Image (cartoon, rainbow, N blue to C red; front, top):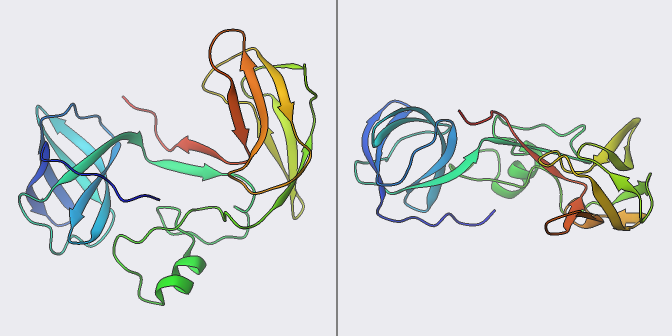
Length: 206
């Protein structure tokens, strides 16, 4: 995960426990994820309430050291859950950081603002296609499967557009979760690449 970019348009104006009030020149969106810069740490937060150009945010970590004037980055994204092979058997914190990987990297006392990718980028999984090049699929249709223990993950066409899509490429074999396993093309618009990992919002924006 990259380091967030901050600007002067959004700043902290108040702190009360784990609730931080911000003021922004940007449009605010309920339940969007934001990051507060405190020294070298970026503290993940979620917008709870909006009143004009101000908003109250819940900070998911210790708020010690947050001061009035600290910069905030708004992401315009909802709090996500990452799904895919490798999820089973992992132990996560509330932000889907894998605790075993965090402990290996940082020790038993976790650094504030520390993050790790929810699914390993090193492990490879065997992808078995269930469609062929030239087939027509719609959003949510299964493109292939991946076995993890006794569970079969279904790798699906993106849900955010109904389609139809034409399958232009699909590859059987071993892949990491962020590698492309299929390519699909809508009747209109740009082709799309599909990986074994999908990111879903925990909430939908209001």
